[in-house]
Length: 257
Image 1 (cartoon, rainbow, N blue to C red):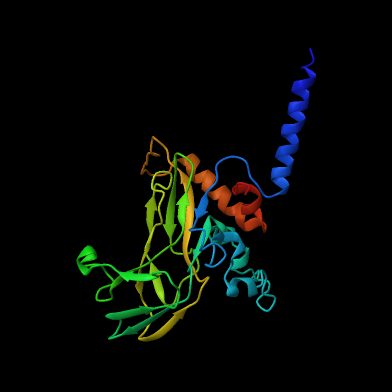
Image 2 (image 1 turned 60 degrees about the horizontal axis):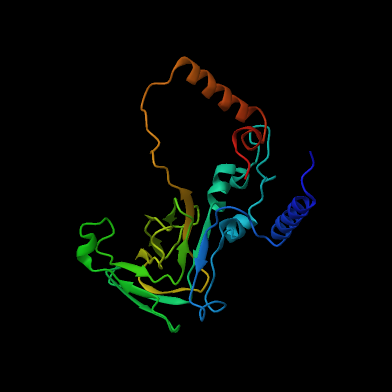
């Protein structure tokens, strides 16, 4: 039995819409959104997929250092380390919206922030809010983030300092937010860790990595045990396969991205 001509036409239109959406970069299904005030769009630095912003040193690094290549050294660099690369690529990077200067003095005990932009960029937490923290006597501060992060129902976000991108001026603290419910900008606590002096953090500097994840009603249970004989066989097989030929992990142990 053939479907009515009207249904066939509707199916064709739907397929064309899907193709148009794909060609325009629109992905079907759940997505993360970053929203800012209309007057800020096009003025402040914008979030980008983490995979589109690699550190300069990583871009310069060759995958194979031929000067190190020998019979006993394959010469491969961290650029060929897929777990390292996947950590760089996961989620989104939220950059510093506008340029900020931090004047650090008294061995880090005093930090004064300044900027020219017409939005508050940095403020201080009260010392009692994190009394006894390992950064003391350096003050706990926060970047004011202009972006509201929104995710579909059941999705939260892990906010972490940009992975494998250590910052030599500030250390941003991590957090988890249910961004399907809390639909308002989230500020980013940080500690200035640089030596005394004036440090300029330019607009667009990677500040936070945002990793969306689906919440489960049932948390994944954990088990701590000694490995079985079968576990040991499998562990050794995977380990030896990784050593036997280049690219085994990417081809056999890594899910497609």
